[in-house]
Amino acid sequence: MQKWVAALDAKDPNHAHQQLEALWVTWGMNAVDTDLLRKLIAHDDFRVRSAAVRVLRYNFDRFTDSLDLLKKAAADDHGRVRLESVIAATWYDKREALEVVTIAQGKGLDGWSKAATEAAAARLQGKAQKEEVENPMPTIPEHLTDAEKESFKAGHEVYFRDGHCATCHQKDGKGLDPAFPPLNDSIYVHGSSERLIKLTLHGVMGPFELHGKKYDGQVPMTPFGMLSDKEVADVLTFTRNSFDNKASAITPDEVAKVREATKDQTGFYQMEELLKEHPLEK
Image: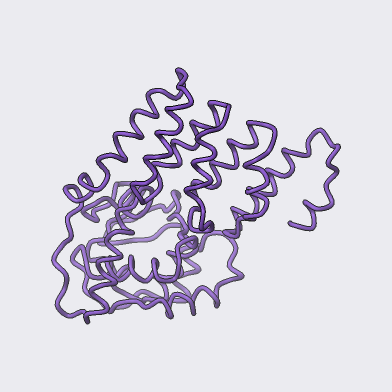
């Protein structure tokens, strides 16, 4: 992709759009081109800058200065770029992101961004207190070692992040019919750790049955390969020991091993394919 970008004609009227297409492709490959993003977030065209901010929103972990990049975008002369920066700030896990909103407010708000900016400020100001009330830490299982208990606690945080596990499977793990199955006492959770890691990293779709109920699997399980090995291990350790599940903890080394072994996997796993590799336990 980098070779293709380097060979593009800068005089082509579609040059900026082609660069954006390249950025989106690398993002889709879970290997976003950080150098290209930095270039496009400073582009002359506000549409390109705003699109680059949106990609940054989903890839904070790829940048050591993501918050600084958001602050620069919040001070942009164009309202669309500022609006993207404000929305992205609400996805940031640190309350310092409130500064992004403050900068955008200082530049002035139009009708499109006023309500969104006010909502973002309110959310970031009350983020810590709200999460503490809404998502209390459950009782940590005693069968876990001290290190595994720390992993459990870290996994609790990952589970309740915006756009992560609780969004579909819900805070109580009971899911949302008919698309999102429950995690409660699920063989897919407390069964084979390798099968669970695979579907977490790459996603899965296709029909299956759980607790005597059939799911068509047309809405796929979102892949979370963008998480680090530790984050995957933590959230799976938490899930495997919550919602009426009790199973062994998962380590970052296990995740790394499966990630390497499945690096050529393209797209979602099909459930039929996954169950051939890892039949359900009796």
